[in-house]
Length: 257
Picture 1: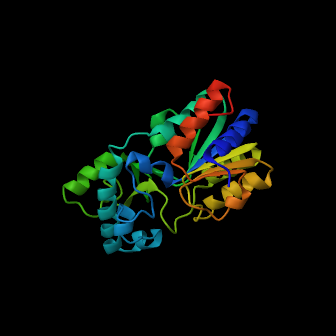
Picture 2: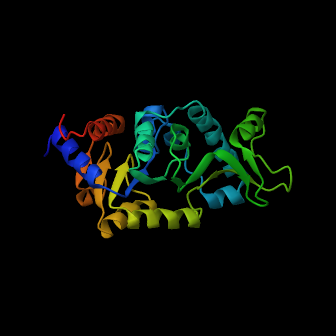
């Protein structure tokens, strides 16, 4: 097992030689911003059952349950700020290294940090949409409805079901974003994966696409993933700590700490 310093040295060497870096982030990058990940014990996701897209469409009771969870999740997300890991990825873009950023997250913190080339695989929690006519609202407006006692919001234009502009279990992935993500993975020479357990398909296949296209891989995740064996370097330390050090070493032109 290589030491932290040895893994940093290996990773920064890969970053220096990369001309087309892609990054992929999951919920783990936002935990340092106070947003619980999908599997966090005691988090919002842990205290509510999953309401599938099909249930949401067909059942008033399921929609009420879903919106109760979303109402609580909103309070967790609305005041969250980008942490050092988000800012480091924005810095890599500004340095001309990072060409595209694929995220499973719905919190918008990458955009808040200054990243501009963001592909949101699971949509965004910052908007809500009518599933029938497509009318959209800021999620804050829908939150106001919930706080006023509207437990199953409907569209004021066509009376259709209103839902956050996120991808639920059982809902089709956004085709355009998936195509862009796989194209990004297939064309990069270095793939940086941060904060995902890589358990949910098809997003979990994206690092494999990069590997199959001969990219090198760096993983930063607190726990093991099913494809750790594909990575050239694996970090289990905090993403902010690792990325801060990698940025520092890149800027210093030095491979050692």
